[in-house]
Length: 480
Image (cartoon, rainbow, N blue to C red):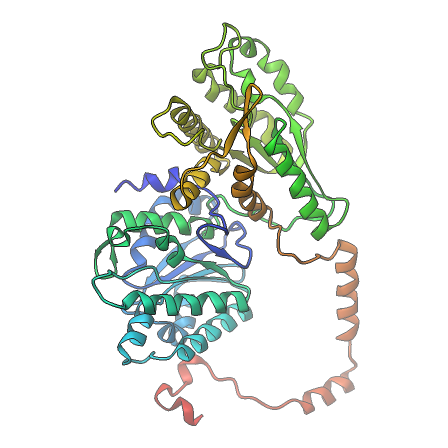
């Protein structure tokens, strides 16, 4: 298996299709480290990701450590978690990805072993959550994936553990990479396995792709929360893409305030890749210079040119499209704090058609430009293909007059990706900067006690000895 297929599939994985996303997974900041704690099933997936994103972690001066716990269970991790963090040098702001649960499911199935009750799993998860909260670490939990159907009834217990992890993730507001849901989309899950629960190359690649957004170096959320005075721009044409920008504005204003804006800038980028367009490229691209924004999305193929076989002068020239995009990125990127290229969705539903092949080639060109320019990519083409694979082929682009535009289905599929990148959709009204300052001032005044007040409060507290994990008598913990 070529690891390059992971890079080709770089995209934000939508919450409505393959992952549960109850908490934000922002981009990794410079110097922040990542640790992946897995078992013999999941650690090889992390090894793939570590190899693929080695340069990205190096650029951020970050470490990606993989810790394999043989026959690892959540209960085992709760006892060794502090040592794992120390080994991986995870400091405040770092992230922890835990991909355990397979052996928990086996214990529950057998009714023997150290972890035969869901309560044990829940207690262990709570310990890990508490430690991460105290150390200000971002915790991401994963559900177990699949066991061969030849082992009768095993996947029933995988579902029990997966449900338990989902519930705890939602309760504690954790990001949850739902690997069980990813695998469930496949009709023949045994085709992802070598034997038992050991994944083959296809299985590893599938789950590695699903975990990409949680690393913080793949395309994912912007690196900070949006504020009321931020602006999002979607460079596109009329139609579904423009309406998506307007819907993002409605969502943003509900959460951030009325000054937030998300608007389309109507720019016929694709028409510049024609004989006539080549003559006016520089003049037209200059229009993008003043389009400043906090976040900029450049839609590639947003207004699909139907005239690939059109008259001279207006015929779309594929060979010139990459050069056009390279120029456009140079113009637009400096004007945005965060910049994303967006690939075009599939055309039609017939994989043998020229339209289908054309959209594939166009998207490959965009991916190539994103890699050359090292800019973020929202892979709309792959997101739609994944949706079609799970739900059946339906057109996401419709003909409107002479043009091909994003339809309502396409918009509904892609909207969560934009929403996720921007960190919108929590349903919570965020505080404005002024409200935040007032809350901080109030908190400061409440903690500004006199020395005498502090002595009284301390005396009222129970004295609880500090007990480190290495000091616990694990065999007699109930007696403590």
